[in-house]
Length: 468
Ligand code: ADE
Image (cartoon, rainbow, N blue to C red; front, side, top):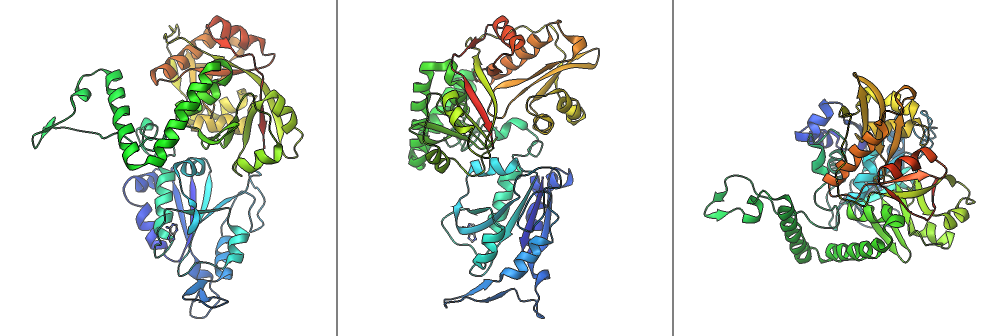
């Protein structure tokens, strides 16, 4: 990921990003931070970039011109306010973040959403801020790190860069550690202990020494609940709401599984309860209650601006598909694996696919398009099945959590590889405490047959996928 930072203090940013884990990410090429000194674009002979505010008031304001010229000096690929058109065919807007105490609170969901971009720009202010006109022209997101005022935007930008960068696959070394931690599922993280078992007369809680994963998980959850209730009652309220919704949705598990799993896995955030609308920042997606049909304007007022995809009932989808800019992608049924039994796998040569296979997957997977398939490989969620060292097919996990992208090469069909791949994914989900599920496009008879063979049950409500 490339991050450009427009700042008056590039050395501040550089010292932060070239240390510790971010430093290693920069060395490994996972992160590329480019700083631009706004002062270099001053037209004043003394290099001034600030002036008095119109209307009076204490302090100075950064002027529009040097900020705008610094921004225009960036070589951006996406459509942006400097007039660049999308060089790589991506028509989405370049995200430019202005860090300011007047911004929206920066949350984990913002970090997740921003970590999916290939390039982002930060603008750091100083003095009393920046002339509003240039902000209106170039900025897409205004974000604050908290209700206090710092001397400048560099520390908040570093805070956000850290939170974003650690979500980039490979940055944290241990891939699962970004998955099970604070602010996922609305609970603060439970207290943790390491060796020695007894320190200063204090022992590690005995529940953690049992070696029983279920007991350990129950203990941790209970500790997390107690802690959250005490120090963050606002979060605890969200946690309770989430549990209440899950309970309700489980009454129709097959048709609601995408909503249930988004809430259970902590990847979805409830943004509306009547009707239920869940925002998934990892994929810039919203999932809507499978029974809901609502007013289109009201719907767009609720959902975030950066949404890419929408999953709704067919009835609501039929209304949304006529909205300009929205394109219907497909109609699907849910398929849910309702048993908690691991499947046997005949061909055991199933491995996570790396970059080497991105092009192969991109070309073979038709439904979501080349770019999408390649990005799933890069996100580390596509697995290949091999015969004599040669790739015979693959399967993956979509951003919202469903198992899919199944593909078997012509010459390797009818060998049971599709069932092996699907079994592999089911087992993996079960190990993580997830309910395995997939979505099958209407009329895909081969896939329906496979689901039936696997003991997977289908919903009876048609869901529609739309893309913006
Ligand atoms: N600039 C100064 N204070 C800030 C804050 N709390 N968040 C973001 N940017 C800032």
